[in-house]
Amino acid sequence: MADTIITLAGVSKSYRSYAHDFDRVLEILTGKARHQSFHALEPLSLTVSKGEVIGVVGKNGAGKSTLLKLLAGTLQSSTGSLSINGRVSAILELGASFHPEMSGHDNVYLTCAIQGLTRRETDAAYDAIVAFAGIPDFMQRPVKTYSSGMLMRLAFSIATHVNPDILIIDEALSVGDGVFARRSFDRIMEFRKAGKTIFFCSHSLYQVEALCDRVLWLDQGRIREQGTPARVITAYSEFLQQQSAVVAPPEAAELATSTPSVASVNPGVPRVLGVAVRVDGRLAKVHTIQSCRNLVEVEIRFRAPANLPMPSVGVIILGGDGRFIASAGTVNDGVTLHTGADQNGSVTLQLPDFPLLKGCYSLEVYLLCERGLHVYEKVRQVAELNVEQKSLELGIVNLPHQWLPH
Image (cartoon, rainbow, N blue to C red; front, top):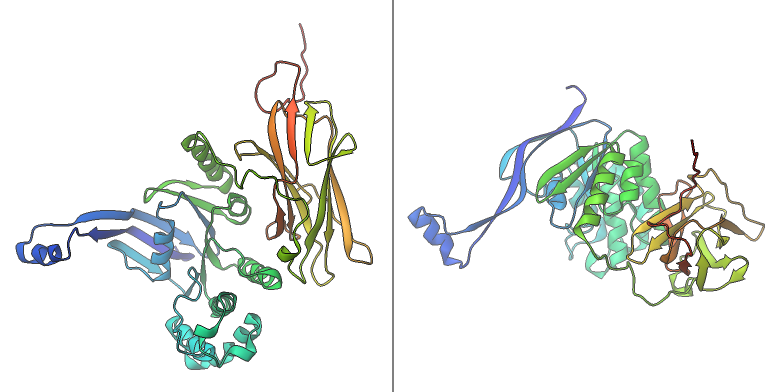
């Protein structure tokens, strides 16, 4: 097809493991196999159209990174053929290809040459790369003197300024801290808007479903399922629940403070100032409430600098086993936040007649970008809700219902 940009036909990747180094020699001399094979990726066939955003999900060891590295050209396949019609840029192990003794300036030219740019093309892109990375005073110094954050900035800037047709992202939708994290997120969104082909691998199923046109679910090196994001993400989420009868809570059991520490604050980006959880007007960190009887209110105070679009807020309710039970977000509900002259604002989520049945629940609060995708700040376990009930309903939630006797 004319718009096909990537074609994989029976592509696989295997590795040989030898018990002793001399077994390699014996294998050559005798012609008898003395190794064990590990199949990181079973034969896989796939076509990708220009402009598609493909999500890749799966458990650790499923073959996700192997697939992305094959597409990026950092690995060679064991079998099959791989055809790519365009320039590929990958956000994988940022900075791994840098030569530590060379300056930032020289590493820019080296990396761009590896990506296939001519000297003239690199000259034209150099100033933009340095400006985006924000480290002009360090470009003549060896990169071995760079901090990890500086390396990440420079590597990301190069990867996104070589004008790729295909962008490969492993885990990091945005990189760095503070203002640069937002800028890197915006940069990737520009690629999506421009119709670039994107492979996005992440454990953030919410972001995969929100951004992608199609999702691949890899399991033990095979495509277990592929299709629309909603269908594949639902199937994969159910699989994860079945695989883990006991899921560890996402954080330590100790209840975290609902006011972010000063050390976690990134200047120049929106931040959470505080969270207050009330039940029928009573403020506390731990609440005992009656199912379907109490009003739960979550008040979030935030600061939003004028240099960025107004942020959004999300609240997630988690079960005692760490599962997501329910969520609410201002983006999904079409609510626009506001701030005063001091750039501070607040919003309150109301949950009347709290509908969850008996159990122990916790709340998480997210301060996100205006799209509801990039996370500025997350406050875990802002409150504990111990729900009791006098009736005998089973399950998690009491759904609104009525009986119609005939």
